[in-house]
Amino acid sequence: MGRYVVKLPDIGEGTTEAEIVRWHVKPGQEIQEEDPLVDVMTDKATVELPAPVAGTVVLITGKVGEKRPVGSELVVLEVAGEGNVSASAPEPVPATPATRPTRPLTPTLSPQAGRGRESEAPPRNSVPSPRRRGEGQGEGQAARASAPTARRAGEKPLASPAVRRRAWDLGIQLQFVPGTGPAGRITRDDLDLYAAEPALPAAAPALRRRDGVEEVPIIGLRRAIAEHLQLSHQHIPHFSYVEEVDVTALEELRGQLNETYPEREHLTLLPFLMRAIVNAVADHKQVNARYDDEAGILLRHREVNLGIATQTEGGLLVPVVHHAEALDLWQSAEELRRLAEAARAGKATREELTGSTITLTSLGRLGGIAATPVINYPEVAIIGVNRIAERPVVHYGQIAIRKMMNLSSSFDHRIVDGWEAASFIQRVKELIEQPALLFIA
Image (cartoon, rainbow, N blue to C red; front, side, top):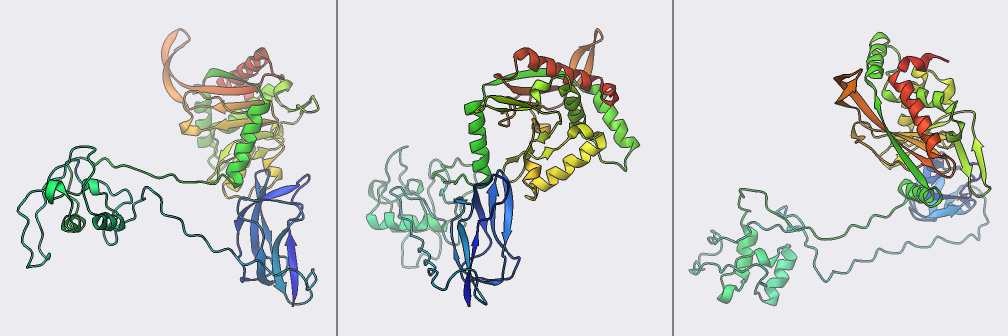
């Protein structure tokens, strides 16, 4: 038997480290060759690393959210044969047992067994009502003659340490328990009766207090997004520009094309916007660029590699339609669908998530009226699509109901002047409002 060490490989050109986002194995587990070991992420691309050989997992190194340098040890396997390390390799460090959390000074109420009580122990009524002693409390016990004493708002309930401890164990807040003892003191019988009686139906939903703080580690894709957006705001002075666009004619054309060619890829609004952007950047090359601010060089691209912001379960990804200038409407729609499916399934490759020269972002039906999209650093422009809504507008001197939409865009003001930004968006608007122009080379 020997030891085989699996190290973090060089996943892509320029990669120096990767973040562990998910472990598929644990110490003591037997695995086969090509079984998944761990998912790591770099540049927003998640890569699954398979086992190079069969064996038994002896040690895993690194926890979820930790960044590991290329070439560092990830997994140690016990394999048949000599393996790839000497027999004197260190033994695995036993896992540290999880420490038991200490009880907070202000108790977090636990659910009551068999009752389905929520952790907040909601009040049944804002003013406790007298409760009648139920059966099964013991025939030798006499019914309490005195009615419970109502407490004023904010008044501390009276109870013995033993009753308070029992209320803690049951997950009950004493301020909601009626007390029948002297001066409204809560007895053990009062507490047991409150715990045994089902909640009274309320005419309106009871207001409930919520306590506690949930700690959510920002790791994986969420951390990569946060770091990228922070970098964008630190480096780029954003300039935003919003323009109203009439998409009535475009929507009519889109509907006709989908009805005439049902066998072809379904056309949404985005392929038309892609064609408009491709045509507009031909006359406004300054916006289809990436700015290396450290070297002071602007890289203006002839090809249009259009990033499409896509929402996934893990967060926002930007898959890239490379050479969008070479795709027609249906090819653009097909590539959009393919990339969106790959991104949402976590199967988009590094090449499919990098290299964009300008970005298009849309919230679809949630698009709102206007937005200030954040530029995808180190690009210099991003075009945001807002919701389409029917509005009364002046059309050829008459009030008409038209389908209107806003374009909310942001530009790097170091590179793109206000006039240049407005001229670019006005050209996009012209192409969208007169969609026949999209088919003229």
